[in-house]
Length: 182
Image (cartoon, rainbow, N blue to C red; front, side, top):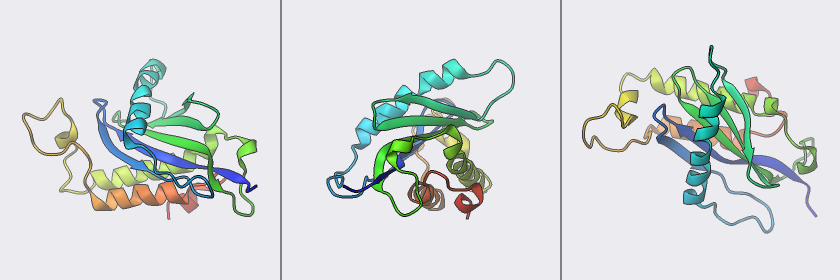
């Protein structure tokens, strides 16, 4: 039997008004794991995290790393991070996600919150690059601030989407921040 390693199953970017801005799904790999992930199921999973973010908000100051939000079962766990502007990043980890390559942590080892810090930092860096784009208007994606139908509330930037995809595919337990920011 192959040794399995945790991998990212889903990355969700949730706006400050708790609206989904972006969802990327990553397939599990290896024999018996080729099934596509269900986008609606993962949308519901991301939605369940919103109350946990709200409950854990500190009264003074803002902590970025919310750590483990909850484990759905023995295979799927959800971790959270919030920016200063209230945008939330959720990474869903599949503990049995990929066939482990030499030197990587296997599924029996578990994860620490710090294992996901490089991925969250890379996501925040990608989001900051998106905000620096003079043609991107973050308020256009906020349903509380838009008046009438203005198009999609999802982030449509190809560069941002590519960067999220790269982060989801490149992450593994133990990766360093400088490796993720390449």
